[in-house]
Length: 447
Image (cartoon, rainbow, N blue to C red; front, side, top):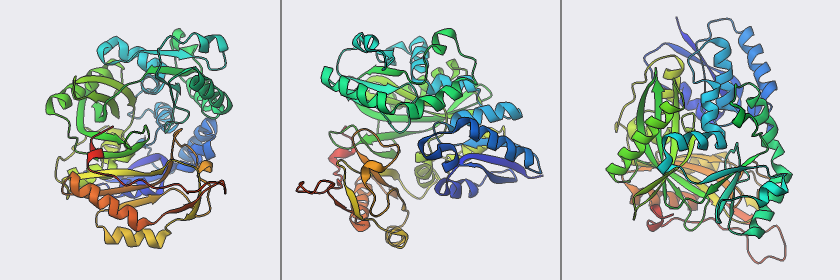
């Protein structure tokens, strides 16, 4: 009998990959909640999403065998809650929150990996006294305790920047704080964590270095990892440029982050789920620092795993959801190197020309092994884009592969030129419109 797998946060790009999975189980994929339904235009309607999911599952004529998701908040928490209700394999909600609640996560990290945990503190941004009492020295990051896509994350170097950041956080944090409080209400929290509400922030020591991500999973208490990905920023900026696989880090560093991740996830009580853990590495000193934990696969890594290893990490998500230990290939793909690039500009503007579907398809045909997701529409003001980091605007995602890193970067720059974005300045008094940045090979490993 066919197994029924329900996807929370379904979007067209990723669902094509999920439906194409080749796993040794007769199964059917169903969209339980769409991406737009769980995001709600930036409202994150948690309780409405849970009610809608329950109604659809109740009306389904067949077995409910797995509920899975590949997005961050609120999908990870919704999946844990729904799996608990239907007695399906999944990490517990509390173990998910030990990863996603930035303060709770740091408290637990410090217990098991003290040398890798940067200095941190929680703060209520609406309490002037608490803000004045922050004891982490400049420079530092201040972020909501539940962040998504670097929303309201600010690098702070002095008192003036702190005041500016606090003003923006106070004005906008409600959009993430309220739904996160709804999620917290479903969990059994320790008293020292329960006092830290969704509108609180975490202050974290600034961590320099090159960034990498360990992807792995826990099955019946046993930890495995299936890949390490380099995460690379734009040169001399804090905005993210690309995920690149395989990692070029030294093997001894890969071994260290892999073992640290396994130890950490088992400490957190996380089981029967995929994860990815992000680190910073300083080449000169070989010092490592833990950035954050995500209790899910990274859908941003799915295509690059497929290009290099021969299978999408969505396979791991689905097999775990069905209670199976995944059987994932290694280096059986078409390319030696692959990446997901984020096309960005760093000033506000109006999109005068955006490639349409026909133009995108033509570029994909011209550059085999390329998939392109355009995130803006012609005539749109960049400042109106949802869920952007605090310093740039994310226009498109380019997934592509090549034989090696040099060929990959050359291919990306040619794709970028072929896509042909154009912008007008917002202010007529400005001399120039936003520019798209091309990438040099030197910037491949520098942050």
